[in-house]
Length: 296
Image (tube, rainbow, N blue to C red; front, side, top):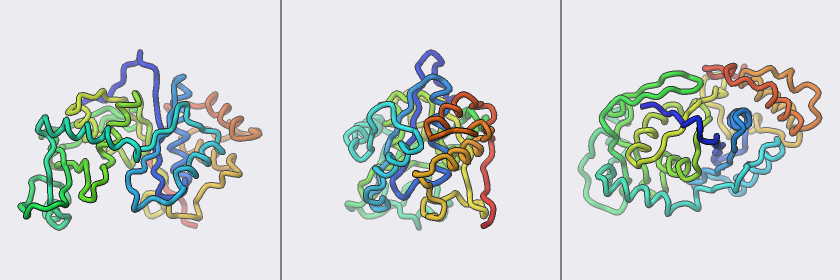
């Protein structure tokens, strides 16, 4: 499988944060990377709020994200989409997968999956009940695509992924389905996001094919990690961004994208910094490796 967008189609990219905590340096790096790629190609940049997990979300955080992005000079070119308002579209996609024989109900627990390292290969028999998830049975094949930054990436869908949850036992829609529906509905041609989602891409491309969707091109940006190697979490309040002082964080994020932060010297505000960043931006300089923060 190759995720390649038609070069003749106007570039449409997006940034899609989850409102589970404040934006941090890693979030800003992903936002800036996707914004710069869109501007570099003369395209459109969208913001989508991925608010599918109410138990983990913080009240007012989605609006705070939009406010902070604006302070850093980045505003969606079109109306902001919120996944919490798009349930009907996800239901239509699940209905198609059911009609075509790819989706099925599953009552397996985490303990049921422990024997296969969390990979769902078959259902364990349970008495029928109301708490069932919906899964998609992926084709038994090796899926591969060419990432714009990381190069070729391949997965054995059966052995490494198994059957994918698309609706959870609590009734909430799963990210793996919603992101496909939204990218298709919004006409996204290039997905530029953090490399923590690289592993999700082959299964997403496989499900795009099952749904008859187009496949965008993918480029996975370096992830900012703690010194231990763990992904930088939104819960690390000490690393939360100061939206009232955008220039230092923009310089740091620009550097994490492999760019020369000195190009932003002399910028008077966030918009000026972004103008300079667009002029100097070189996509080929984005590193194909993650960044470790030094111990405090």
